[in-house]
Amino acid sequence: MSGLVPVAANWFAAVTGETIMTSTASTPAAEKIKRRRGRSTETTPDQAAASAMPSKLDTVVALLSRPEGASLADLVAATGWQPHSVRGALAGALKRKGHAIASEKRKGERRYRIGAGQ
Image (cartoon, rainbow, N blue to C red; front, side, top):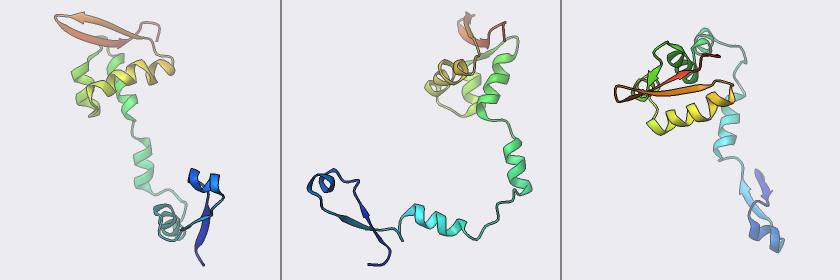
């Protein structure tokens, strides 16, 4: 039974004491490990350039830091996120990073910006 390992993740198997066998050779994780084994761990110039690019949250912070702030439509266009995801980032990730988000309605359009203390 080469390549087989016991798995007790199934609650029925845990309760009854049965041993379930599964093959590790064909799982996606095993394939990923096999592909990774021959690679070097050095960073290529393309990888370095990609890691230097600002994240979408960095883009949101830059837009909110402008004096006029940003509308929801501006943030959606800049990030490619759905409106509910943008609102979630404002209410969650940015507040956890310590940003105070101010919201005001101007000419029928809600504008968001990072508070004056930031």
